[in-house]
Length: 253
Length: 105
Image 1: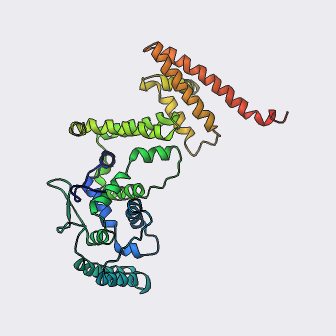
Image 2 (image 1 turned 90 degrees about the horizontal axis):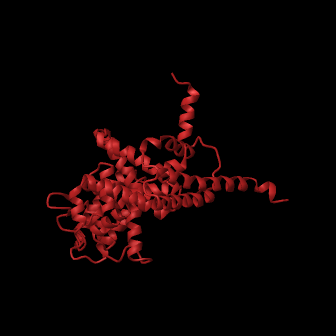
Image 3 (image 1 turned 135 degrees about the horizontal axis):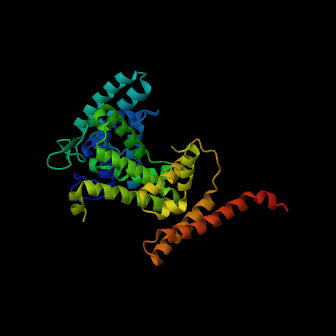
């Protein structure tokens, strides 16, 4: 993926729609994803709910970008020794989780000092627009450096995997779901909504739309073809999104 | 006052794919909304022949579209066209169900 500005994020329409349906700001949704990507979990051999899905998203992106190549390239002795220390802290030391995480954080600090910072902005901030930015964690930056990719590439890939229309079409047709990114999105969004309970109260318009969406999905019962059903759902959500964000329509055209 | 069976009859009368997929009137759809929700719920224990379902739903959509092309705005004609497909579907479903009886003959 080559971009003129590697630190520029392009938010796809379906990601905007998903955030709008679940009433989460785009910035918030992306920040949550960044916060769940940790080096500790990269080295941990066992599954950690949501952390593993966030990492799997990164690995699927890397695999798509450079299929079959070794994941971590040679980064010189200093970094290599940090990585070995992390591996020891996580796998071999027998430390409990919170202590191991603290030890890993120390190594991540060291690692960040040893890297040249080719792949992340020095400010560790990624701007969505003039007013909003994402804070890139040290873990996230360290991973970008180790795996030789820009933060925006990973975030672009994550966003490209999010589609409410795709999820619902698969769900309604009882198809197997293998989208770890969508799983991550939905579960973290629900956690976020439960923390911000005021968002669960629907306005009259939101209630009407929820009812309309429910009826529309029942209407689609006769459409057994997956791409067709997904396309119809996509159009349904797009139309609604543009009706509440008319400015976006001008922009899209 | 209305008898319960009369209310149930009114609901049953509204359960109709031809009506549901032909009309634009939301108020005429509630019976079938309930029906579709029910057959997708865990309480529904019936068996659905999905390949027949897919085939006849496609046929019905075509029949309704063609009817509206020839008779724009004529809901009754569209419903009638869809009902012809429903009759074929019902025949095919019964034949399919009876196959285990007739196959060995």
